[in-house]
Image 1 (cartoon, rainbow, N blue to C red):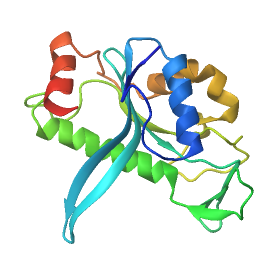
Image 2: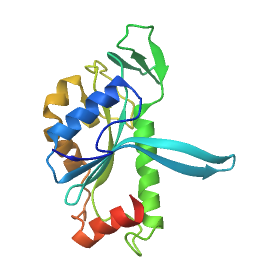
Image 3: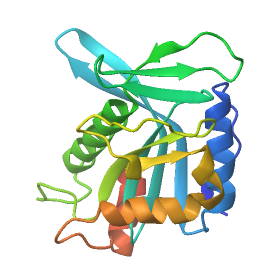
Image 4: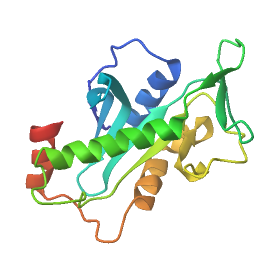
Amino acid sequence: MARMIPETRVEPGSRGELRFYQYLRDGLPEDFTVFHSLPYLSTGEKGIFEHEIDFLIVHRKKGILTFEVKGGEEIVYRPREKKWFSVPVTGDKRHEIKDPFDQAQSNMHWLKKEILNRGVFPGADDLPFAYGYAVAFPDASVQTKYFPPHAMPELVIDRDGLDRVGERIEEIMGRMRRQGSRAMSEQEYNDLFNKFL
């Protein structure tokens, strides 16, 4: 079982997040650490803004991965409108949702910037390990044939992939490996947790 932070899911939230939490906990081995509902702040011209990473998966040898989770029994991307839609499990009317890939990508870029700014890897201008983002639709089977340019079906874990969640995460983390990516040393891994997480 993966190490979960927090150990029990206490925050109210979507059914999809609860399902994904349980599958990650039970489907990943103990050398994975999974943060759920990791809050952070960013600043801009209009002030300070609150954000949240739905799930952050950390592995010393494989890197880090942010996940944005969207609930709903149907998730659809409409290319002409450039919009995502969800139909809730409750059967309510279809509604527009934020672009999950944009959210996951923004979270990953913020995370990368902050890790570098906090001196976890002194002098580095990029993270030395693999990093990336993905999206989970735990209640839906993705029927979308066309994805926007910044998204790939290979970066999605949907209802049909939950039983193989460990395998799917390993596949996604493998795709995120860049030339020169390496495992974190024990010291770097500890620094990541002590100085940042």
